[in-house]
Length: 384
Image (cartoon, rainbow, N blue to C red; front, side, top):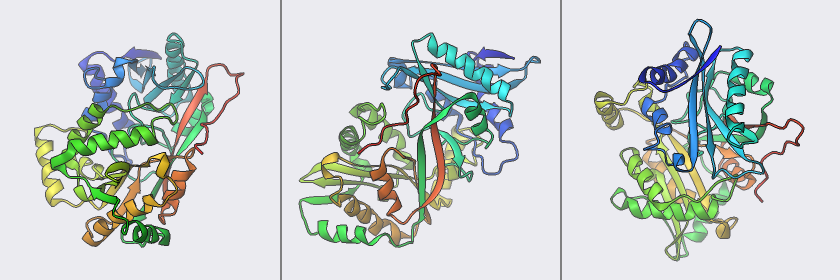
């Protein structure tokens, strides 16, 4: 076996197409858009290259056939107890020796850069994309969600990876009645004019992007090695999302006009992109616009929900959610709602999700491997 660094256009093609052979015959697998994968490895488009480093490889057998692929990366802003690198974009035939060969190679690459542990499979980027190993719920994946065969769990576990934290996904039927406490919270706060919940407006998208950055940095940035997100990054992200945004699905809550929380959802774009076979050129863009207008998207996805610490536990989350539900439910446009993952280290957010009347739809895991095998392994600390 031999590791071959991805450098040429042909290498990139092999890297993008190898998962097709791994998932052949699985009707639930949806090929990611090539452009979404390639953005991760493009220094001109991925800001994490400014303070990080990333390399990817193909694993070839003795006959030159691709039997695996993987990437390794260092993000200097990813704060942990010990210097921790990352691996991701892992695919492999069902062969422990092949998987170990790739893991060993990445471990050595990371060691040379001062790392003492590696997390995986994760993204060289934000955590809402390509993060975690799927271990439960093998139905069609959400947009930019990792999807893998069941045997990948054995490949990671047998090497020595351990669960750093679990990523829990929740779902519900849109028409179902929510828990009574949400209705009570709505009744309370709707009578207090200093509180207001509003859906996003595309014609003022920069304002909402800045509000998002403010809330995120207050509520999320300090958790699990997270860092503050820049306003300009969110503005760019919102502008990119703009064609897919359904204004009825993105909500903010304010107290005396100060942003204190958000509930960010999008239509499940994979219901459109599963017809694209990884491509998103001119004709695919036309197809997307046609499908978006005339096709049926029955599921929307919760990307992120956050309340700044000072208002957590006050019931404003119920007011925010009910404000959205009062618009979404009567429209009868969507039948299913699924949330992006919530870390098991965040019991408050897990509790909110469970009290929506949800069920567990799938589970992913962020795994960690300590290079010093005598060192005590610690799971992600619980957020109190």
